[in-house]
Length: 147
Image (cartoon, rainbow, N blue to C red; front, side):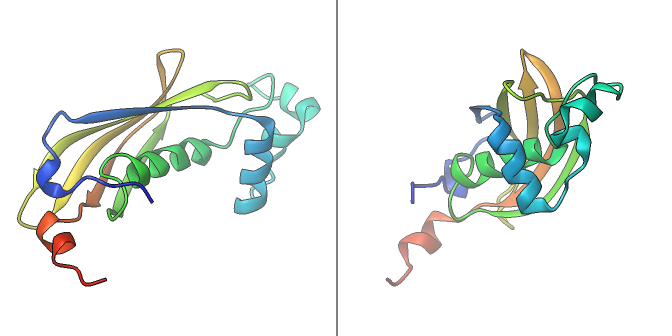
């Protein structure tokens, strides 16, 4: 497990970006894990008949990229995901590189809450926008922990 950031390490404006190229395998695995077998994600012939004119990834796959960035990078391990809102702006297609950007916008040091803008981009254009709230671990509690 990698080291996460503590509440005391965070400041408004701190941000991270993580990139991931969406593969056919990602889409199939997400369908299997979620139970969402909508043919717009899995059947090219069907997807060609839709306004998208081809297969698209599940919107929540981009949501999962946000979750991973929060869990692994900012704040990282030890944080607790409390809420998320998402607005799906554009489709993500197999082969697209999704850049997930997380930025701290507000801190509540008393309660340990952190608000973050969450955005996924493809070719510099937002495909998903939203806001998350997490609870970040405190340094004092982590250092006082008994193994």
